[in-house]
Every structure is written in C-alpha cells, then in structure tokens.
Amino acid sequence: MSDDEKAVKIPAQAEGPTQGATLTEDPAPGEVLLKVTGLQKHFPIKKGLLQRQVGAVHAVDGIDFEVRSGETLGVVGESGCGKSTMGRLITRLLEPTAGKVEFQGKDITHLGVGGMRPLRRDVQMIFQDPYSSLNPRHTIGTIVGAPFKLQGVEPEGGIKKEVQRLLSVVGLNPEHYNRYPHEFSGGQRQRIGIARALALNPKLVVADEPVSALDVSIQAQVVNLLDDLQQELGLTYVIIAHDLSVVRHVSDRIAVMYLGKIVELADRDLLYKSPMHPYTKALMSAVPIPDPRRKHAKSERILLKGDVPSPISPPSGCRFHTRCWKATQVCKTTEPVLVELRPGQQVACHHPENFQDQAPQDTVLLTVAKEAAELVADEVLAESAETSAAVAAEVAAEAAAEPVVTAEPTEAAEPAEAAEPTQSAGDAETADEAAPEASGDDAPAKEK
Image (cartoon, rainbow, N blue to C red; front, top):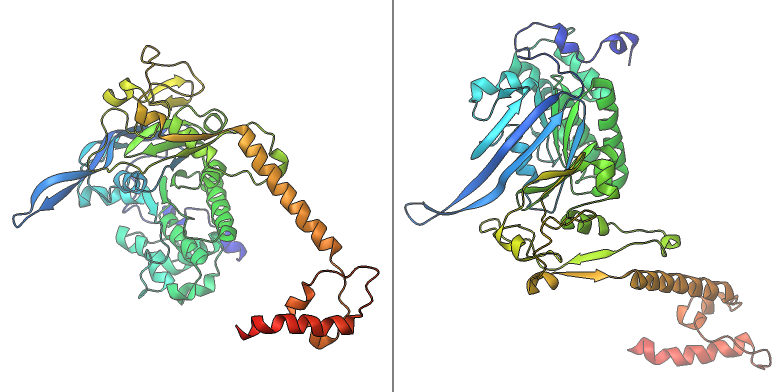
C-alpha cells in the first residue's frame, strides 16, 4: 500500500459530501449506544385454507440489555435460542413484535425504509455464511462499493480507490478488485463481508457467528482482524457465537441466552470465574480440558439431559426448569426476573450458583428436575485421566520394546508376519525357517 493510501484516515468517506451523513454525533466512550427494552419476535404459525394463525414461535421473548460505545457484547447459547433473530432485530432487518430498540437515544423500533436509510451508515451486520451472503454474479469491487452508491456517498479519490483501500485494511490484495466470490476461500469471503460492513464507517457492527463456518486456523485470523479494527476505528460490536473460547477472547461483557430469554448478563471475567445461572455453569463445564496434568484440578462436568423445549409452547415459569438440577416448585410457577445480584453481573434465577438462594423456603426438589442433569464427580474425572495416561504409557512402552525385523524384503512386506510373537533366546529356528511357517499360517486368512 502506497504512502498516499496510508495517509487516508478511516473513514475516508467522511470527507466527501454531506449527503447521507449520520444524524447523530459520535458517542463518547462508555456512553450507551444501543438500548433494548422488552424486545420480542413471534413468528406466526398459520394453517388451513384460510391461513388462520394457530400458534407462534417465540424466537425472542422479552430481552433487555444495553451496549456501550467502544465495547464488545458477546451473545452465546444453544442453537435455536434466538441469537441470530436478536441480531436481525436490533439491525432492523426484522420487524419486532413488541418492545423497543433505541440507538443513541432515538427510537428506531418501527422506522420505515426511508427512516432507516440514514441509520444504515451507523448500523451494519456481518452475516454468518460467507458463501451465501455475497452475490456470485457481482465482482468484489461491486459488492464492497454498493454501500457508497446506495447512500449517495462519493469518497475522496473515487469509489474504486476506497474499495481497494478497504480490501487492504482487511488483509486482501487490492488487485483482486475485479474477481468474483467463487475465486476466494471461506476466510477471504468473510473478510470481504467485513470490508463491506466497514465501508460507511458504522458505529455499531453486529457480527452473526462470523467464524463458525471457517477453519480453526482462519478463525484466529478473522477474530484478530476484528479486534485490530475495533482498536483502530473505535467500533462497537455485538458478536453472536456458540464458541465460548472465541467469545471469551473478544468480549467485554457476555449475555447468555436460552429459549428466547437472556438468563445471565455479566462482565467476561466474572462470568467465567463465577457463573451464577445453572445453565451458564453447564455451558462452562462442557468446555474440555485437554491437559492431563490438570486431572486433579477441581472440576465438575454437568451433562444436561433432554432437548431444549419447543419455542412454540415454552414451559411456564423459568424456561430452564425442565433441565435444571436445582429446580423447585417456584421455578415451575414463577418466571425469574433478570436482576443485578452483584456489581456487573445480572442473572434470572431463583437459586443462583455462587450466591445466596433467592427462594430458600422452597426446598422440595421436583422429581423431573432431580433427574434432569447428571453430575460427574471429580473422582470419575481423575480416574478417566489416569486411565488415559496409563494407556498412553503402555502404548509407548510397546513401541519401544518392538524388535527389529530382519527378514527378506518380500517377507517384511507382510504386516501379519511382523505381528508374530518374538522368539526366545534359546529358539533354534532361524528367520528363514520361521517365515514359511508364518506364511503357511496366514494362507487360510487370505483365502477368506
């Protein structure tokens, strides 16, 4: 990249015409950028000739959170918990059923296409699938340059120069301006999607599982790229993922979703050090520890039984009570509210972990709840680790004690012969005499 291109600051398009400019000034670091209150999205289920509504899928069912300027909010949960739907709601790609979405103090919940067009410069989205989010009929230059044409913005030096600069920012060759998406790998396509999202210098970027479709080696590159861009441009992220290691690496705060609800919202260090919701604890315990030297470390693996209930008819009370090992009668009848039990840690649970019980008078455990989870004790984990270490030592000993075979080349090519028991020191047979015997023994097996 030339010195002239390096001298162009991001965003270069801000120096162009004021047409399509943002409606609000840049927020101060730490100021609330996005506020979501009671957000809901129900997809109707229709049936019959008249297409009457017979039910609804409660994809997102009343969530509240805030995103501050310059921070990264991670959202985790099982598949089908409503993470991606929530991302599309706050970017207004879907119309909310109820609730309120405020961006920099302005209500954008029910803005029309015309009202949302200026805000598209400030709110962008990185889609999950890099293979289907890029038009295969368009070149990379057309794809990344589309936001400028849609917003009527003419960057200094022209759209082509700005697109090439954006490609350099995300680590791609600017000379690939005229190539098509099929000529790039999955990681490169995701970088193209990131370049398109950054074209108009947005204040908020919603990344819907940006690395889930990529190889592990490429995941690290994309995650580090997002981190570098945030430090350079002061971006605010909402990153949706199901990989706890990725979320821990990039997030400042983490929201845990289950069946359309946020069950815990906390600072990253607090959440990983001391999770308070049983579901969060189960997620954390599912992360494997590949180090055998930590076999004596205090750990508890929680195996949740059963599937997530249907979002068409979610359970009454706490939605996790059908799979929770701490569930009581109050969990079945009363839905817990997301409240701040510790500074920087909110949880919706009647019987939180690592904290005083919120309903101590209700001590009779439900039979279903007692059988909902299987707790694996530390002794079992230690025994499993010792068994693995013993097997590895035995394999290594066998490999070290394996004798050197000095048979003829044609005889050494037979793997069955090499597996014959080793001869004793007093055995009078030579290798040439033992080889025909082994061949004779293996003959019936070959005929089969």
